[in-house]
Figure (cartoon, rainbow, N blue to C red):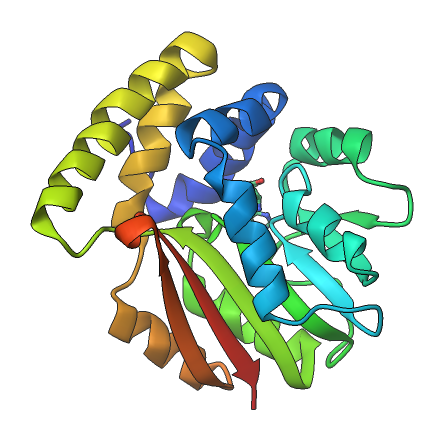
Length: 231
Ligand SMILES: C[S@@+](CC[C@H](N)C(=O)[O-])C[C@H]1O[C@@H](n2cnc3c(N)ncnc32)[C@H](O)[C@@H]1O
């Protein structure tokens, strides 16, 4: 098998991979992003104006980073992931008031229009298909509900893109092999290839029922935050 699994095997490969790397996932995230991932999460939650009136879904929550940030702002939080070991790691660090749920982003176990905010960090490129997930989010968010997606991105400046490409595709796999799991940290940078272009993502969001779509670049474009409102 190459680094990127085919569509029919992707869900299983991704789930078992995250189960494997769960114990070292947080440490690797902080190392790879030099700790900036948490700043990007806090800034996205602030931009979405999450407050104590909100019910927030942290979709593909992993170890629950977004869930904790949202809960710190007083929101009621539901955090969902399909990898059991990631949820176990989340359970160890999340306050008991956060509802942790095992489930699939493609068939959310939530009632229609039952949440006011949905966030998802570094997960888009791990889904088997992005449009059906956005449609599920469009279903469970109530009208006027806010969506925030945090993902990796490719810098616009060619110099930065070159440097970042070397770091992300050459250095990160070595760090991963030394500190976690070589195969997983070859997959994670390569999985950027699954991401749609800005225009494709905007079209997917619009057809899933979202408006007011905005993109914010972080650190010259190594990461991006997308926000949108459920129409
Ligand atoms: C890169 S991790 C991101 C974790 C966390 N959101 C963060 O910001 O660090 C991607 C997560 O997506 C989850 N995932 C991938 N596909 C999923 C699906 N179809 N349903 C639920 N979770 C999924 C994986 O299990 C993994 O925990």
